[in-house]
Amino acid sequence: MAHLLVTGGAGFIGANFVHFWQARHPGDRVVVLDALTYAGNRASLAAAERLPGFRFVQGDIGERQRVENLLREEAIDTIVNFAAESHVDRSIHGPEVFVEVNVAGTQVLLEAARSVWLAADRPRGEHRFHHVSTDEVYGSLAPDDPPVSERSAYAPNSPYAASKAAADHLVRAYNRTYGLRTLVSNCSNNYGPYQFPEKLIPLCLVRLLAGEPLPIYGDGLNIRDWMHVEDHCRGIELVLEHGRPGETYNLGGDCERNNLETVRLLCRLVDQAFEDDPALGIRFPAAPPVHGQQCRDRIELVDDRPGHDRRYAVDSTKARRELGFEPRLELERGLAATVRWYLDNEPWWRAVMDGSYRTWIDRQYSG
Image (cartoon, rainbow, N blue to C red; front, top):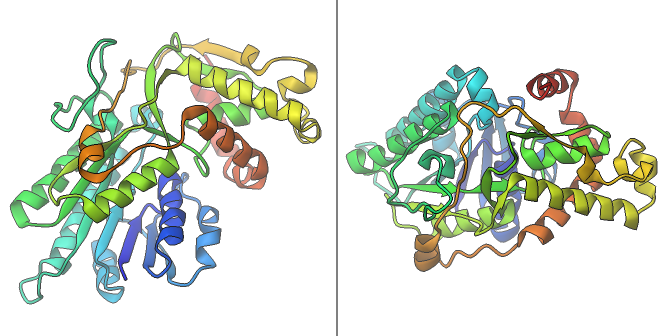
């Protein structure tokens, strides 16, 4: 029986991981530590909280004493660190909090783990510190460049990516310097249930349902490697169970698409959903299909953001060879399931899209 501390477990990927882990490891103890900032939503864990062996704690990874107390009282042997500020746009407008949470917060979490797990008066039992990172630390690729591997140089271009790169280096240093059994995984773009509607796919979906324009940065040809969050959770499970401490593993979706392609596919799936279910027209009367229009007609190109990376692509060869990782959900099927989830869970995304959030979104895309 493992005892996990999942930091940032009320966020998008964290909440999906909690549900995935509970389904696959029902006998394990799962403790979630989350500060419940704007992107953390305890409602995303409602199903988890009904199961035995689960505990939610509201708190910050920067609160060292609280973290140490949790590690001791819950006999935690595994930390999975999702806690992070993760939206590039927000990092451009306010980089300070990204350094505070992603860099300083990770260092405090590492130090708490070292203090408890590697204490001189305690036996060194099995433990795992898994840090969840991003492909953005590698920077932008040219059209003909090969996908990034674990040996690729870091070249972050946004404050968000730079803060995650710094955290990655700290995690590696705690392994090399102190012997902490750390692991790092760098993932490609995720999508799926419980994603806060500031990221491309849920943002465009909820704006379509409201009959609003779909703002796409620049020429829309920026390329991303897409992976359904369930595949990511499966990859993290493999890293935890079979990864070698001190190593980094890239987890990609093997699915490069430019943003216009991705949004047009989303539009086609929404059009189809309204055709298949006429009741959606009653629930969402402003949506384009209700007025005989195609969703793709709402796409609008807006001014590009500063430092916008042109292309990301991830080489998962190492994870495939050493761990047996393989993404299973191809984009159209995974995106169709995501559309269905948001249509079936309207109260969830309505609740997170309060007035202050809407004001912020409208300000970002007013151009």
